[in-house]
Length: 131
Length: 128
Image 1 (cartoon, each protein chain N blue to C red):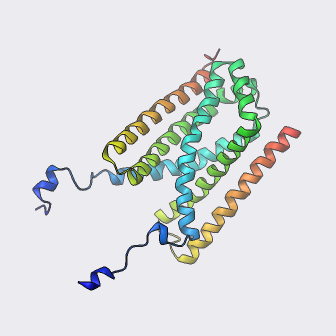
Image 2: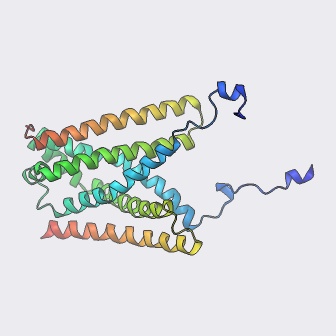
Image 3: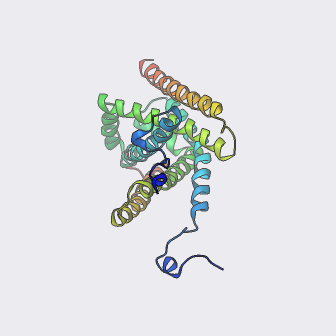
């Protein structure tokens, strides 16, 4: 009877040391949910476009304001992260990349690539606005 | 012969048997969103100017209209599949879970329809 109480429990979030793999996994979910909410911004932009020049100009003003710009940066990072990590998931689904070393290598690739793409995107946006 | 108890069967416990199609649809929409999403972002950056006339001209070009409608449709579908799983995983109360799933379906249908019709109105020149 006593042994029953000493059986190993399946690891629980509160007592489990965060690792790259688990952190990237929950980040994939969070960016996914965030992108679902961000689709409201895309719908707002296109509806304003369909409503005509005045509505569009007002919407473009709002979308170009400082605080919304920070939101758009967060959306673009989430997009690139979810895209890169999604491709990582598709490779797993096809049966590749399950070795621990491979999972870490692809994980770091996703982190670096999604940050680099976000920086590159906004460099292009600001260069375009200046030029 | 089924090993399930009559009580379990009556209560509707066990697999709903639509897991595979959900899983497959999530992957297929993901695979489609790789080129569609990249196209969308690259196009936005490549846009000459974000002013009304340029954006209308861009949306109304036939190839862009087709790709935008596809991007919107597949995005909302993928979003619906993903957010459903999040609710199924984390919302344990039956009533709240049912409400969450119904809300997700309705919200995605509404937002998807609104977005696609906005694109079509711009493309067909019905915009004011």
